Length: 320
Image (cartoon, rainbow, N blue to C red; front, side):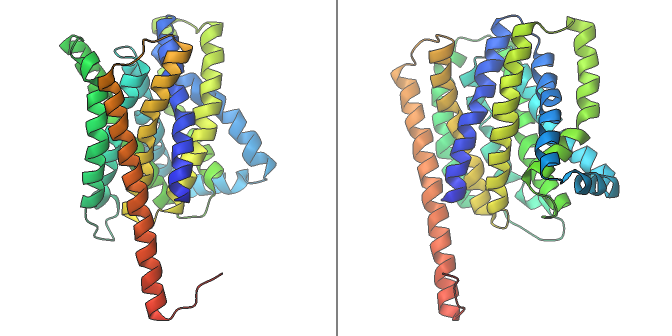
């Protein structure tokens, strides 16, 4: 339950991304700068946080020892996750992007058999079924909007988000295997930010060539996104996944909490961007999402209870 609650809190801070990225798009800002500036802003903040703890040296040593996995999976987990997600805001409102991105719930479960070659693991079917409830709510919420959008806009929104939805859990879980508990959450985020810099530098060069420099409004909004989503939300989510990383079913439950981004993003767009109040259909969809999150929490709690029962029967003494 602790990991689930932390995951929901992370979803709240993550939702700032969808709201402000849409805001910047409506203001005429380039998606390229919305993506790259976030990570450029994150880097000095992370250096200050990790440096204050005197933990930068272990990160550099770890990256030098295994440079290829660091650069490859950081680019997947940060670059191929966030660039497509930001691009998608051109073709849909923030809540629609957040809703479609919930494909990552299914993606996280489907990736289980391919994440560790040393241990044979099965797809957590129970998590898949519960995730389908959440996805049903997600698609109900976007149905009304999607029915009025041209096909090309739908494709240019959905295809990048499918890439993003698979890249995020893949990069996150692979980096947990690379780190293997040797670095804390902030050290891992700093390392992944450093390792993904080549990707962001190349993308920013394209952005400067194609769109020129960002305006002051986009710089300020991207800084807010960097703090809220890049630092606070990412740290909370990574911490939640680290708590349950040995249990694939609970891991899927934590990843499912990110469906709360849809609700938070929709509320934020109504308040900040004066988006119209959703229809009754959208509210029904939200109900499905909330029910799905609750079911994941219950399944996670039952899993913990069964584990304790096994420990008790085995006669192993429990810590108070």
